[in-house]
Image 1 (cartoon, rainbow, N blue to C red):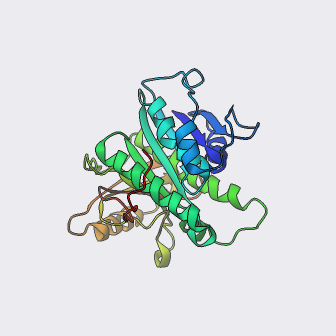
Image 2: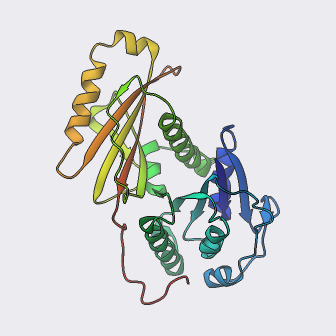
Image 3: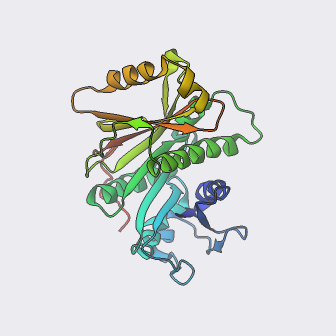
Length: 284
């Protein structure tokens, strides 16, 4: 898979993906440390209007491509131009929402515009999937963190979770009941669950609403698979508890070499999240 990071947050996450051999990464930003350096612009609108032609540098097609950006940044104004240049690939977006209580009104509006438009792209089938991530939700799932390396810790949590979901999707479970999500459910978020903590079992990385499908991927080591006679019942009882009216729930159990048990999960929706009117202003 190709991973393309746009802007500071996108580039940092793309770099975090590079530790896994399954990904080839490209970073696009205005600083010289990026793989592709573009001219700095003064506004969201200018990035949209003057985003450069990068087709010679992004010379790949018919591949799975994950584009990462944070909507509150000015450079995210160029996201649609970038997607247009990558349209011959199978495109997904990893969308990062910063803590909106700590950004300006202009940044909030930029986030709203980009997030809503990209979700409409996903619903129309122009994107395979959009993964919505709220930094504050990821922070709560991790717990206390030191200031030094704060964003690196958050980025590693996001990247590790999506990577493991990708690994499990392409692996055969020992047992499971996978149900393919609805074709129109292209808006998603990720999460983690703790098999040993019933009081706070799952932590989602975005407060997704109108969920239609939920999938749980359990990574269990060989010893626990052999010796824990309660494990299967715990998993199936929990999965059954999530199967409410209108929501399809499925799971898979995989053997891993890790000492600790893991559960990574994903929710899907067909409904645009937090949609509000844009006062007739949009990225054209």
